[in-house]
Length: 364
Image 1 (cartoon, helix red, strand yellow):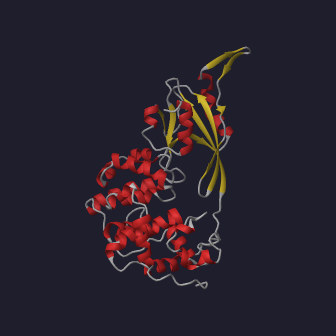
Image 2 (tube, helix red, strand yellow):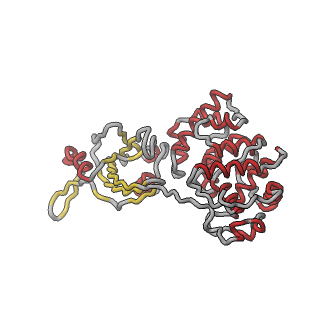
Image 3 (tube, rainbow, N blue to C red):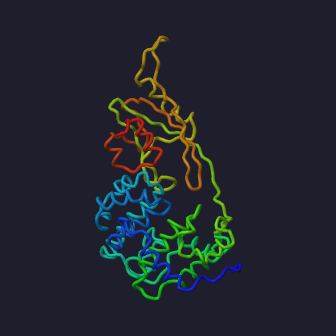
């Protein structure tokens, strides 16, 4: 395809040797290549930097040292621990997967690729990582790091936005695996390390790459152009209006979001489509709110606009308009409940909600 060069002979041998000498060996989930910690780390590493994952991984392993412990946990506790890591569907699938492994497989992760892929939240690459790292199965991981390494070394100029290109590179990845199963964990870790630490998306460290002398992209000066991906994500824009209602006891009104949409299952504030709708929702209680005395007389404390929060999601840009309101004790919204500082810490939160609460509670 596209005139790419064949990969060098002994690719696997060179990669294994490089990993043993230059690869990463101090990641917390590497200490024992068991399915549970490897699976947990692989899910967390999706769309997230290693430095961030280390902290969350250790928190999860301390609280849930076995997959059975995670399965027995309440989903709100799981989401609370996940708060700040983003992409919360991962956390919900993590919990569902733990339950299935516990109930269907007796707490033991299956070893075969297809069986692993049948579990909630486990795709092709995550399944291959578990199978190869933990069970020495001859299956290739095909995540973005791997595809980037192979595309550059081969000079592959196919569009990575096309399924046909991804499928073809996946077949190439499978053909490169070492013959000896015992080498699979080192090989798999090696190609992940190479993509993450050397053959990076930007400013790759070509001088440190074991494939530098045979890399077609480097030879042709196309490292910054490969891999090619023409398909762009379509982004939408949305405005949200949040009412941060706090009563005289210091509790803040919280609402658990539904099972669909952004931040599904997380806790947040009362949400409205417009400032007018938000204001109207407080009208009949406004006379009951606390009042302040000013030079002009008594002033009713109506919802006060806070600084607009900008938040970027993968497919959407959000403009969040928060309003703070010292609400009466009997203010109510369907499905809402008054939550104290400690109670907010026990539920899953989106990053914007977490930041706003921190400012209200002065960094609890």
